[in-house]
Image (cartoon, rainbow, N blue to C red; front, top):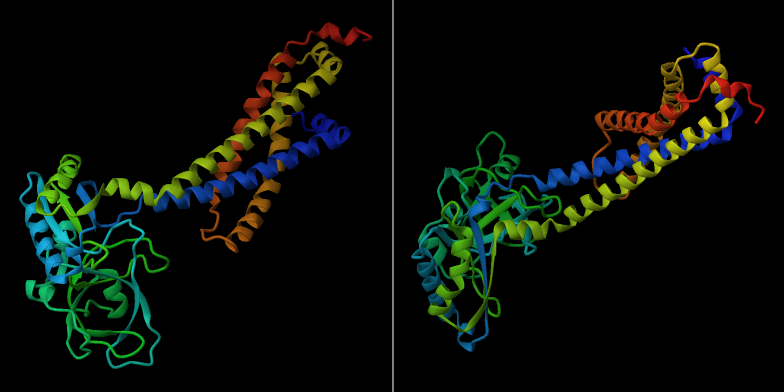
Length: 406
């Protein structure tokens, strides 16, 4: 093997090869961390919310007529809206709810165990909804029941003694009462006097990214959307009918009451909008990685081409002494592989150090050995591919070049 001549060549042109080693190391460190951030972002993009998102439509209303100031009028319009939406062709379920999956509107509260007022409140999301809410979302109630119509229509009061029914998601219920024993238990709002909250139902899957409470939720039966905010609706269409149903909703609701404006969005549209920053992050990091790899490849091409031009007489001498073209190609590819490997070894340490620094300022996961291994292999492939052209040109040098003075 040509390790001896390669090491001698590297030591004679130390600065040149040190620059390439540094470039490879920096590229590996940045690419590995960019790839880790991309994997984290893609995991967020692909997370399962537990809802029938493909067939779900969110309808928000904004009244401008003074009649909507009266609660009784709003309630009549809400009931008429729900009836009209359910009668539409292609509609599977309708709910009047203040919950918007993948929406920015979020309410967070703290809850405590009943009888333990001194405990630290546990933060959770809280939303209002009607008995059809879970059918509209496509979420299964795995224990207990949904809300009754009487619970939903009950007038809102400040009576702290009046018990309220609530529904939790499975993961949060098991966090509060391990062993599947949450049904029928009583909790309370944290921070002061509050009515007892009895757990009457548990839904299977729930996910809405809100801080560190994205898998905790509590639903209460109540009408949502007081003046000046109009009622909101969740409409679940038959499979494949979401766009057609969404296009007919405004005309349907205008026939009920024309004194308001509407915003109608399908759930895939809402999710894309909510996750737009992740999409932008992935696109930006992909561009950064592509640019870094391109610069590294060009650097390797330039280094190998310069080495070939500088050592033409040496190549000719080797050819005259019996080296084949394959030997010459192998020599330059091996030289490149050794330089790239030195840079990769340095880059692994640099990538780990950079990852630790990033985790101190941004949320993310630790860099995995699979990512580092993939980065090293990628740089090997790019390095060998970049050096192949100059190496093939070197193999074309004739033995007679060794006899020339210039």
